[in-house]
Image (tube, rainbow, N blue to C red; front, side):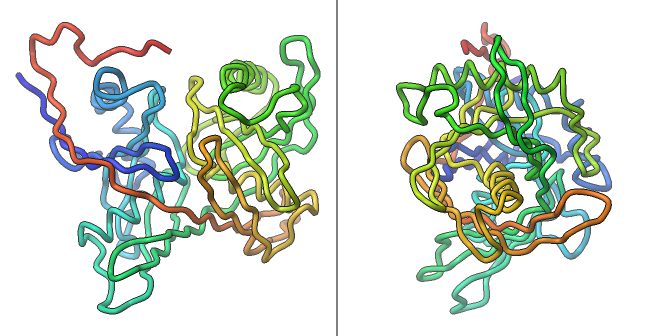
Length: 333
């Protein structure tokens, strides 16, 4: 039997995002967390079909749409990438909010300057505000789930070196390290070395650190490694290597929230201030610390907001013919 899956594709600051719109069963469950578990069992072949070559590539990202958890939400989503299903995706949240306005799923009031879109993701509920220019979506800022710092200045033994790392949660766990600590810069020519170090750091962290996500997903472990350059006060360039060596072309939305928590904890950024966060390809997010809850039983919980733009790149119907010798596809990297 021939398989046909329809998608609408976006990029957010250069990072792809593939929204599945038809041809696939809606993930089942009472909540997005339960629907994610159902998708892991029942839709992993579709994830592979859409992410792997020849229909995708090693750095593809996307989602399955779901209903929201309750009537206060507008939609839900299950995020996926080339190595599985993530708990958070900031660039995907920006693309989804844009898509919801463009398709009329969430219609703004006539003449409105902006409109709010509430999205349930596996790490929790996020609220996006979409700016409107002549009725069309423009910049999107979203309030992420609360971010927190796990460890500052964690020293890990990685390939014979002691590396200083900050580990924080922004919907998933990220370790961050200044690229100069590795005698590298966040530039395309250094990307192969950064990918290698990202994989090595992730492996070391997952055998050394106890990283249990503070949400209902039940997930554990380090999701990504953020390498950054300091360009000026409140201005950094970064690249995030996540999952199985995937490279985020955008400044990484949930990773930006994790960086904001670290900077807030270190006193490098105050509530109300903005981090200008550039990517490897020259695109930009604006990250803001909007609040801090000092909890006695845990680290500070930082409220963060991330702003960026998404653009539609295409609409596709992907086909898997029954006699296709490559089946669901392949990954070379």
